[in-house]
Image (cartoon, rainbow, N blue to C red; front, top):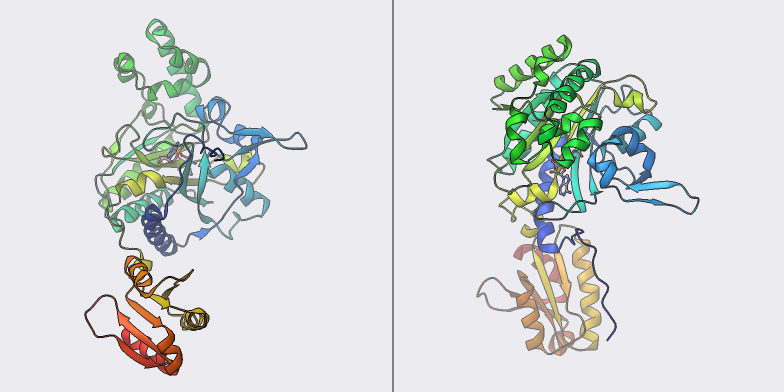
Amino acid sequence: MSEKVKSIRGMQVLLPEVLEKWQAVEGIVKGVFNAYAFKEIRTPIVERSELFHRTIGENTDVVAKEMYSFKDRKDQSLSLRPEATAGIVRAGIEHSLFYNQTPKLWSMGPMYRYERPQKGRYRQFHQINMEAFGFQGPEIDAEIILMTARIWKLLKVDHLQLEINSLGMPVSRKKYRTELQNYFSDHRAILDEDSLHRLEKNPMRILDSKNPDLQSIIEAAPKMLDFLDNESSEHFEILKDALTSNGIPFILNDKLVRGLDYYTKTVFEWTTDQLGSQATVCGGGRYDGLVKELGGQDIPAIGCAIGVERLTELVAVSNENPQNKQPKIYIVAVGKEAQNQALVLSEKIRDLGNGISVVMNMDGGSFKQQFKRADKSGSDLALIIGEEEIESGTVSIKSMKSDAEQKSVDEAKVLEEIKQYL
Ligand code: HAM
């Protein structure tokens, strides 16, 4: 026997039974995007590595440790996208999408990060992204958060908690960064290796450390909110009021810094205690400087991404998939001629175009064997064509879901009859 080819660690296959739940989630999410006038965009999975270095940041874990980067045949460095925002911004600038045409975009697809795989954390995972461009005021921040809250509600996912913070504009953030660097330098002796590394390059990320030995100095560290510039502070106050007016509870988390460098002002995460250590189901924030940074006009932006694997894990219902509610027919056909006729009939049923799913028995078998397969397929109705039916120009119809008698119908009337059954 030949040797089997192994799958890649952290890259999951999504089996049909799992995908039923995914499709239910996708259906609901698409309806919500439509309600908020977001339009879909699909960008390439592969981009120039430079795009991610310049946006996510050289010193983030994502760029420094987790990218799938490789050289193509022309020796250009390319990377599998670790997230979608950078690619959407790049594409939007290239196609002039942001300047008053299509300012609200959503996207869904696979992302790649070389992380240590565990439940809820994979090397290939999927995100649903939403991004809005050109809106300065905090109303859009509120609308995006409300949109995600609506998704949770429609999917009947509770226990999600909203955490928000403001990182301010680059000027106030720079001041805070220096303050934090001084503070943690004074505690250098207690810092672990990871935090010492972050101290030089990205001191705000020390606030993210889960090391229990560091929690007391993190707790006592200077707070970003005390360093906020007036504009960011006012923006944040209005957002908080808007959330309160719309009945969305939130927690102020001044240690919420996010793992990507492009954020300004508002950042937020939806977290859960139902998924162990991989608690963040959705995260995002403003990135007012990014479009300009990538060569576009100076326009503000905000967005977030839902982790689809994590969200579907929290969704209990799988039978909301409309495909499951569509009628199924199995065609039992014994004999060469019957088989031929079954093929023609199955196409005619599909021509009816009303979502009926037709399974034609393949590769022969006795009546008994074929009925067994029909039963297993979960069909509502079996159509039977055998020697007898061929001779008399009929098709037999049998309900698989009731005890109703099998019925013989004239070949020409079979489509009419099916419509009545279903
Ligand atoms: P992020 O926080 O890096 O943000 O990822 C967003 C979500 O993707 C996470 O909250 C999580 O649910 C999911 N996720 C991330 N990594 C993994 C993984 N290895 N396995 C499974 N799920 C994962 C971003 O990517 C930003 N681009 C979001 C954004 C959009 N900000 C503004 N616009």
